[in-house]
Length: 165
Length: 158
Image 1 (cartoon, rainbow over the protein chains, first blue to last red):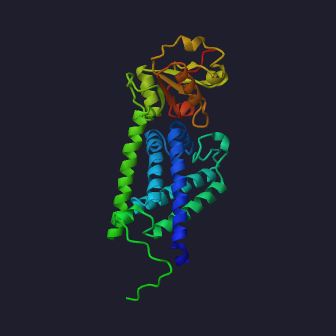
Image 2 (image 1 turned 120 degrees about the vertical axis):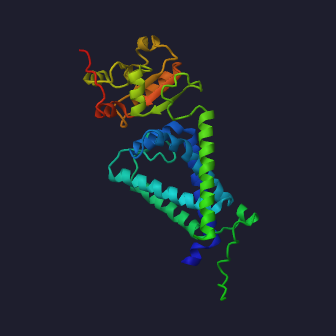
Image 3 (image 1 turned 45 degrees about the vertical axis):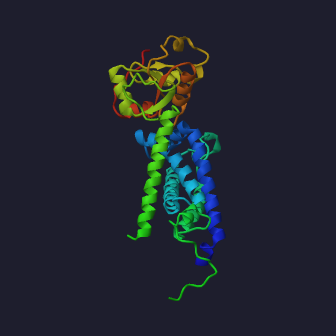
């Protein structure tokens, strides 16, 4: 299992998935910032200036983290942030579902016509949490800018045996 | 804490700071600044609406710095509204423009509806911006928040 989770193909797959999801989600929020603020308010977890600050900053954090994961730049920091964001997003959706709120997710579109959040969204998020966990437990990844700058150790070949020493 | 973990946290903080700088800079430069500037009637950025809190709405109301526009139906308005507010139901915005045309376009305006469950205040704010108003604020907590805060209530004139 550990060998599978640290397989280069699994890691690059998780990077492509999370990178593309976070970049596209962030860009869509940047283009509909006011709508995103309304989506945050609808969760009834934050209000006032906290909503405004989150609506202005979070989309850019998503874009930067998505790009960092794809490029392998600030790789470990971005994987930690993506993991934490996914936990927070899932917690918010879960609380909305448990409170019976009739709201849309606000994840990729701010159009309320997309329907209310539900267990399907939580399952999708769990998949992304697993993908981010895979990146978090593997401290390095091939095809990373960080490897060029030597700020990450090279990824071990999953087929190689452990050094007995 | 290992050096590996320290480096991870350092990178996270750097990304957070970078996002904050870019996010706030972009919002300010693109006219999408969402934080309210209470009492700043001379705001000169490109026309956009801001969400304001109960405290900000109460401040603007107390000082008489803004026109409050109630976007709810006339029936709800008659049951009670923010003192001094005028009623422009969303559905009547385009059919009856008399009231809107009489208002100065540079005056600070605050729109509201029932509360967080309705979006009429946001839609009305967008219509006001399209009509040439330059300083439009949305009190998203709306009538419910105003009422539950035991703010001054004006019963409608029959």
